[in-house]
Amino acid sequence: MVPITELVQINFDLLMVGVSVSGIALLGIIIYLNNRRSITNRTFFIFSLANVIWSASNYFEYRFTSATATLWALRTHLFLSVWYAFFFFKLAYVFPHDDLPLPAWYRRILLPVVALVSLLTLTPIVFSGLEPLAPPGQVTRAIPSFGIVFFMLVAFGCLLAGLATLYLHTLKEKSVERAKSIVFLIGMSVTAILLLIFNVVLPNVFSNRSFIPLAALFLLPFIFMTFYAIYKHHLFNLKVITTALLGFMVTVFSFVNILFSTQLSGIIVNVTAFTIVLVGSIRIVRDTLSLKNLSDELAETNARQETLIHFIGHEVKGFLTKDAGVFSALVDGDFGALPEVLKPFVTRALLESRSGADSVAQILKASNLKKGTVTYAKTPFDLKALVTGAVEKGKLSAEQKGLTLTFATDAGPYTMVGDGPQIADHVLRNLIDNAINYTPAGTITVSLKNENGRIIFAVKDSGIGITDEDKKRLFTEGGHGKDSQKVNAHSTGYGLYIAKNITEAHGGTIRAESEGEGKGSTFIAEFPVAPATPTQQPATATA
Image (cartoon, rainbow, N blue to C red; front, side, top):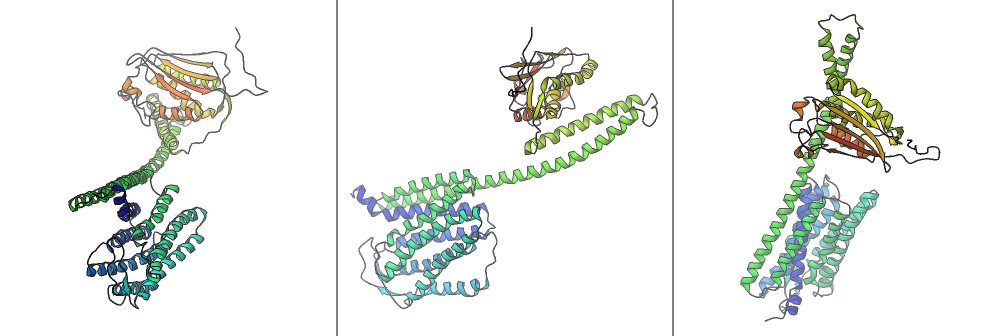
């Protein structure tokens, strides 16, 4: 039995093939699926396939024991090397464009020359024959003919032209894009230089073929630097990159099994397993990327819908506000005294128009909060004065329902920094109105106190209460209690969501407490007290 250390040493070149094939295949799939219409992404995908095939052919060119098979393996590898260099240049030329028309010289000169030279590599014009077969695992020297010059000109030319083109692209980029291009340039440059030195110059000029089995190792700088560019500059979703890296690791580990296979049957089984794992990893990456793209599309659709809702909301609010103005003028007698029979209807229409305008305003406010377009004019103000005003405004509605609305407070101070009107309209008023709307009979107590540098505003009612299930939906966008709309048909579900966002934007918290259905509820909002200044000393309570 071959010792493990010797086996690993013998199969190191095969391990490098597995690592490079796994990495470049997953990388090509990720980049291609991220944007199939991009010429850079499509070319990268083709280049990654060229890497896979080229790496495999490089490995097999010194694995045959027949002179004929070895000669054709060498010629085939040279054929693939021409196309590898060509796609290297094309990738450098189109990078980083999504759409770039290829020039006439590309189709009329470069492509025919590459095709012709690649075909010449399969003929005796390039390799006329072989020297005696080298021992197994070593590269046999082919006898070059005059055609090798054409191969070297094309291979050298494409690789060097690709590096020069990519370098010029990098110079033209702006700072942010240049940083991405530099990483990509470094990876391609290191790989190209290593391949030129060890796979072209040394074998064909100095007859040193000892580094050819390590060709797959020379691809790793390009693979790793491309992965690094994607990670460093957030070119793709982190979940996609994480999935790809995990797939890469699993694929490499499965490939290691091939290294320790000494029987033909074991090699076949492990190669099959490696292929299945690689294909499975690619499939998982593809599905992850598809989910990410679907998520992006849904986000765009939601953004368009929100824009449309915002537009419609503004239009509806404008109409309702105009209607309310007309009904208000009629009620106030601006167009003469209304007949007694019409007064109840016009008054009701006025209230409904105002209620409708308020509902639309809440939806628009929630949309602005979600988009982050709400701004706050934060200045010092007295919260106690705002609470007093909100309670006075709520007393008429409470009395019409036969409710008792009271306000209790201590000495304070109640000075805080924030947007007073927003807090008054969307936090204080909202919590008091909610208590009135959801309390069929009984009492509502509004309290305000200062405890340990926190202002605590609370509204306690004897209303319908809150179930544990309903608590989960409170303060969420459009969230309703299970039967809340049966009690308050005009509820939009956005009031508490708006109150929560505004409270938290002022460094506060908001919560709801209830012992259950039918047992009333208490809504509590806490705000930080404004720090005292030399001209503003804290008020002290007096007995």
